[in-house]
Image 1 (tube, rainbow, N blue to C red):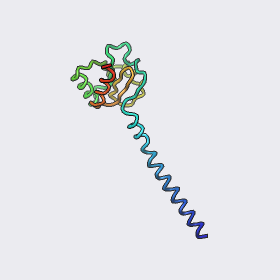
Image 2: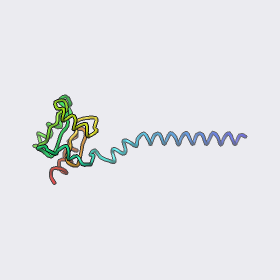
Image 3: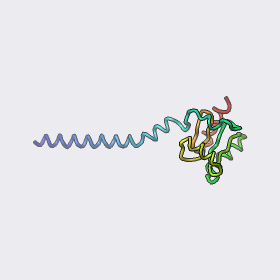
Image 4: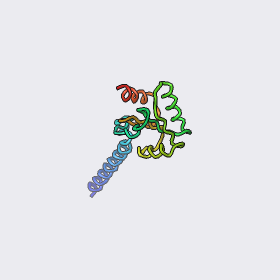
Length: 132
């Protein structure tokens, strides 16, 4: 009888430990996947530059400091872009909603999308998309 109780306790502890490890690993999977995937989303985003003057489109607002940093970076580096200001244009807002993104800035080329502002990532985008 004592061995049955001992086995039951050991099995219960093993199951609890396994469940704990699974939860710990599972909670990290979205972050690991995002890191593995990289900062860019690939796809056909050509609709966001179609009928525009430039081959890059920046979606942002007038109140977002990261959007201002993105605009300053693009201007400083002489990169021409379509500035789609969501809080000034219903059309820009509608086009932005098609991307299913929740935050700004979002910069889009024909084949890549990047959320947020990071100089190194903008450099990569510009070097891969504009200097082909």
